[in-house]
Image 1 (cartoon, rainbow, N blue to C red):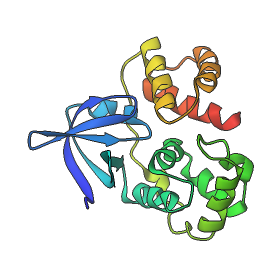
Image 2 (image 1 turned 30 degrees about the horizontal axis):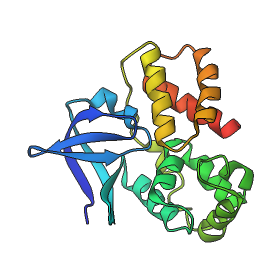
Image 3 (image 1 turned 90 degrees about the horizontal axis):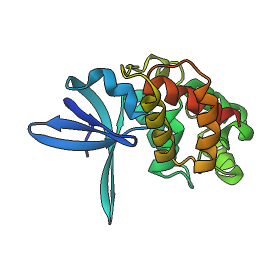
Length: 200
């Protein structure tokens, strides 16, 4: 099993980034791939978790060991797979997530794609009282900016939301709201879009 990868980011897509290590390009799934745009062609260290299935071997990447540990706790819950776990991790408000689990805020938890009332209740049941050591450590996660402007940045953000599992109907609603914002980068649009999804 891999702990981390150090390599150069060579490509960014809505659902993953490509990190080149010794001439091999690794696809690494990320909740917000565009946070790495400011690091294109630069060396990065990503903590990774590998999931092996019959039809795929997938690497999931995180900025810090604490983010990876939170992801592992999430996918240990019945009903939360790696894709759902990554969609939950895409929202940078990890403190809000931990707080919602600790207080049993089912309404907040069901706003994530693929999380219904039963799964939200299971999250609280399985993780309440077990995330305290991660609280506070997650706020220092590395945030990187994307330097492209215009509506292509918005379109990329919408594609990333769809890759996380939000429906076309949900992303159309958010698209209209984001058009009214004066944002510049895909990362900014994606963060704003995730916040709007949590308000639905």
